[in-house]
Length: 464
Image (cartoon, rainbow, N blue to C red; front, side, top):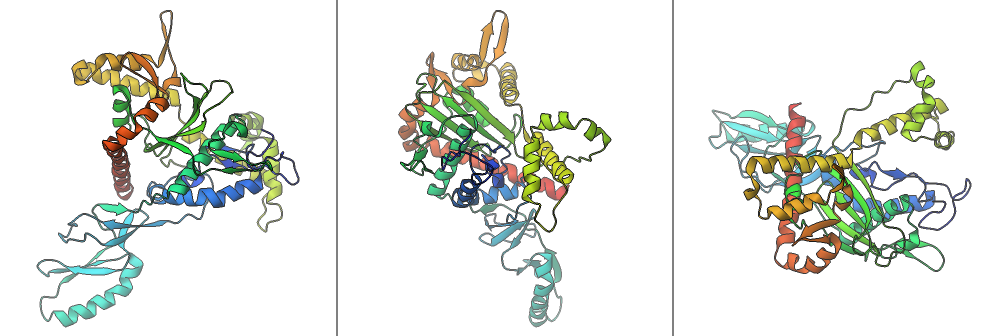
């Protein structure tokens, strides 16, 4: 693209500078970026107005997952929650206590102390910094309250038990954030801003704005295959992940849709156009989220010998290096152009580590399911024929060869011996799914699975 999708202006090297836009917000672990869809002014404006409130919705999740960022950020490292478990390791009921999570430890918002049931111990709940000051208060109380058999002091800077963390869904911020992701992804694969009228409003003065009154449909697994894959998502392949898919409906190519899945949990279809006139499309982005060890890149003679090959492999242009160098030239701690280049190379290597072969992951899930069918027998599934036909959607048969084809994923399914479009079926059944409580039950199960995973990962971090 040669124009910013928001202001419509053509990029230049003076007034309309290119912005390195994170299509999936960096604060929630997104690594997909593109510098050809937004200008610097519009990118920064959308960052403030759309990304900040959207990211705040997922702050507690992203923080507890310790998501790896590509660049340093001044994100908050602490989040608030409420204890919901009734007994801790000392047998005391702390339910209802307001807590702070920080660095994988849980402490009360306000330091507190409790006596054991037999008064043999007094437990001080506080972080190490607060505990020293709070101890004096408790010592005075103990001296006054106990003449003999004074309780033993125990310090607890990490409360065990279940915690309910804040998850505030701001509907306007959520819708705008999803719309921005969908528009950005569509723009990155060359779809014109005029082809997304249901998410991007282009005004008479040629400027555009991200819409909040977008057409959204929540995903729900239809058919036995998808129900199985969703139920096993945390056991098959990487978890959690972010997924984006732009596609045209198979039976109605005039419908242009973006499927957005965040943290393998929040799954929505954003309808971009009901009257799309372009070619049929199915494009995706898929990435894992868990933090990995940083790539230790030390440039030596070998790097400079293979420099051109390395930069081409990473998709780093000399123009990008030069622009980054010039941008920081006037700062007090300005770096040499060689240092700027090395930083960019390190950043791109880290991005590579989060990319996952989407098609291999989905095919792997199908293979795991097939293995389980052999172990458990077809009788363990309600409709074996329906299951087989849904699996067949993912394969093109060319002679004796089976060619895996990803383009049905989250797009099509088979029911009653007919191929159907997810987006059309959900439009028809959305109200009944909602009224029956099935949609809410499914959403809660996905959220609970993510919460359980985060809790287990937190325990692993503590034991490491």
